[in-house]
Amino acid sequence: MRRLAFICLSLLVALAGCSSRFVDFAPNEEAIYDQPIDEVWPQVRQYFSSRGFAFRETPGTAALETEWREEFAGSRVAGYWHRYLVVAKPEGPHRCKLVITRDTRSANTALAAAGSELVWGVDGRTRDNPEGMGSQVALEESMRSATGDVGTLAASKQTARDMVMEWKVFRQIAPVLARDAKKSSDVPEVVVRQNDDIECGVPILGLGKVARPGNVVLLGELHGTRQVPHFIAQSACQAAVQGIPVTVGLEVPDVNQERLQTFVASEGKEADWAKLMESDFWRSPYPDGRNSEAIAYLLEALRKLRARGLDVEVFAFDRPPLNGDAREEAMADTVLEVAGKSRKRAVLVVSGNLHPRQVKGLPWNPGYRPMGLRVAHLRENVFSLDIAYASGTAWICAMNEEQKLDCGVKPAKGKDNGERYFVHLFDGRDKQGYHGIFYVGAVSASLPAVHLGVEPAGDAQATEPRR
Image (cartoon, rainbow, N blue to C red; front, side, top):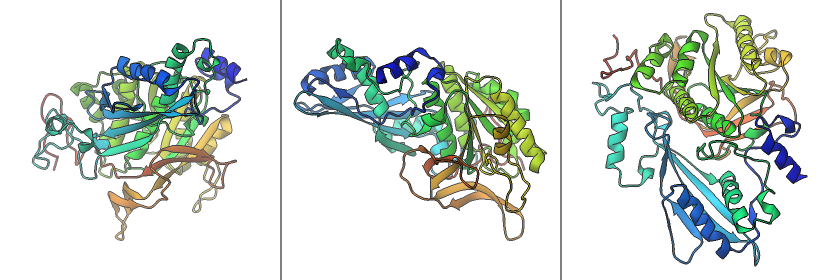
């Protein structure tokens, strides 16, 4: 039965033929070799060496640690580093397994400590930012001053066992070890179909249950965090390398649609950034977290994935100046229009967490019909997920005691469920209209990508803020 399921998944590019059974992208079973460690280990070393990984190992042991390797090199915000710790362990006298731990570090400003500023310039030094913090020049200078340990640069980290990588290695070397053994095909239903060398970060547990062809996933976020856009970027990558085309929807005014599409399809040069950032959207006098550094990170990540050959798209679905039910209806219409263009795509839509609800009414408006309810009424396979997070901070706009809108870094209280991202589905829909949650760990505030109207730079440095 497992062999049949594997063949089915191998033949269908969009996974449509086996859609009756949910399959996660992250396997929950170990890859076991029917050979002892001394036979398996030389092939493991060859696997990592042939893929350009430099590594060090202790003589006499079956363990290695790769050197740090940069992914998305040259990206101003999407680049990160990762390394692997690989250990072979016996499973009886003649069998063994690999335990691979992935260590990921990022120095991009979208995931940095609160207070850093992403400046869209060649240099980025200004009167208020003399060190050019957030600019490419500052990043390169910090890298040159590092002592060889990327950990000194890291503003964000994830460390976890990577069973996807364990099965990648298994699929490559098991046939070499035993060509007549059934193990080369007896693998869990996780198949990386294309771009096998693209790294998508630590696998998100449970993501494969919802990010499927034809599904619409409505993610209710807390605006103004670094972690939610990072979660969306990793989700898009992990689904796309499975051969699932992905469309990401952002709660951005739809007048920016052409601008977003153009940037994601661009080479990411200074002129491309300038065109993206010249929109009034980035210069709102009351930035509410939707125009943050982290959203810029997300767009850059999608652009880099597309440049690597993955099928990812983006769309804007907000409709100002509409409010209330009129706004919910307009947003739902846009989501339905985009989702209706192809049943082969997974559509990931991120918005404030009132919009994805699939029940009627709010405490202050019993007749309110959110976007999620409207979308689910006209389409099947619509999943609404609410955000879950550990305590931290977020960039939030709220009314202060003087009844004035106050925007800034505010505390956000949550429940700690560890560092690793995951998706958890309930047995059914809860009273708030959600099918489950997506968890992003401890949250940290993401500042506006453009502060006080700072101009995006083309060939010149960033200008002084407008007064």
